[in-house]
Image 1 (cartoon, helix red, strand yellow):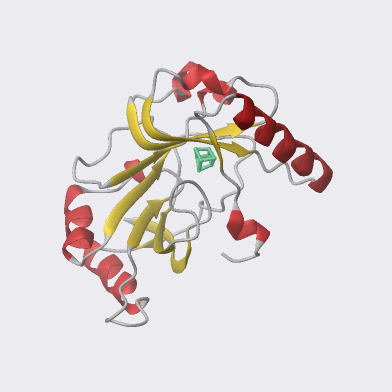
Image 2 (cartoon, helix red, strand yellow):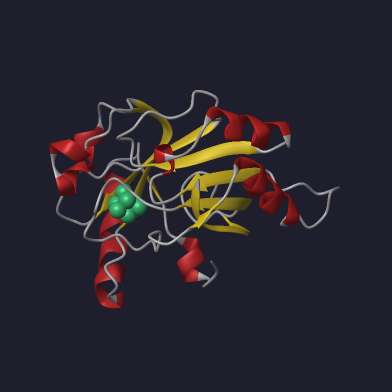
Length: 199
Ligand code: SF4
């Protein structure tokens, strides 16, 4: 498996925002979003055992286990296997996946965060997944988040797009907050790891 990085941090987005988590970032993605802010191109070839060992080394205290393991990318569905998910679950993690939803996932994943990109990339990027634990739709002030009303989700998050420009980002945050107030089945998701400047 080609892995970009494995690290311990706080989940910055969505339902588990603020929760300590180990992140396994796989290299590579099947989409090419113009706004992608994740450096996932490079990687190190690792076996499942090597990934499990690297995760284990990040746990600071055995008596205070880290609750979440998040497989992210890139697009984790390109490489994630049921056996790697099973070994993470056996180690006590709730196993989360952050996906663009265009590829099937191992069936034993505990938590799916689906962030669809078809609004920007067209039909080929529309999700094949029809259900998620959290649905995270980027808000750019121009596209209608209700385009994903057909996707069943326990939690629906609207996340202002990071444009790389602070004035525009602040305006989008306010617009997204207004949208959530007017459409209360959505909740606002901010990228708190960027706000507090952690990984
Ligand atoms: S789906 Fe996500 S990781 Fe892939 S290119 Fe788009 S934003 Fe980047």
